[in-house]
Length: 69
Image (cartoon, rainbow, N blue to C red; front, side, top):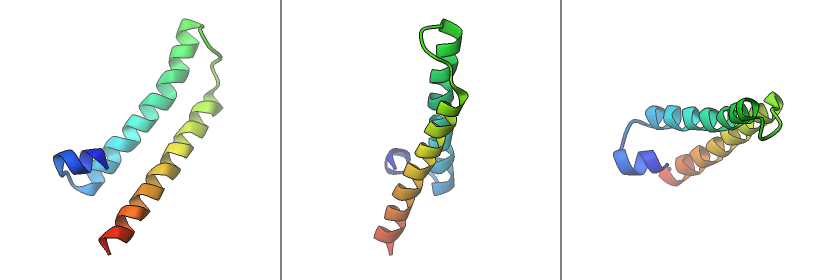
C-alpha cells in the first residue's frame, strides 16, 4: 500500500515489490542465522513467515478492493 500511495505504480508492480520484500526479509533472517551462527536456522520458519506475509497482503488487497467498490 505504501508503494501504491507514494509512487502510483500499477497494482501488480506494488504486489510484486511487496512479495519480494516479504521473501527477502523472511529468508534473509534465516540465512543470517545460519551464516553467523547467532540463531537457529529453520527453513520451515521462513516458509511460515512467507505464508503469513502473503495472507496479510491478501487481507490488505481485499480491503483495498472493497473500499474501491
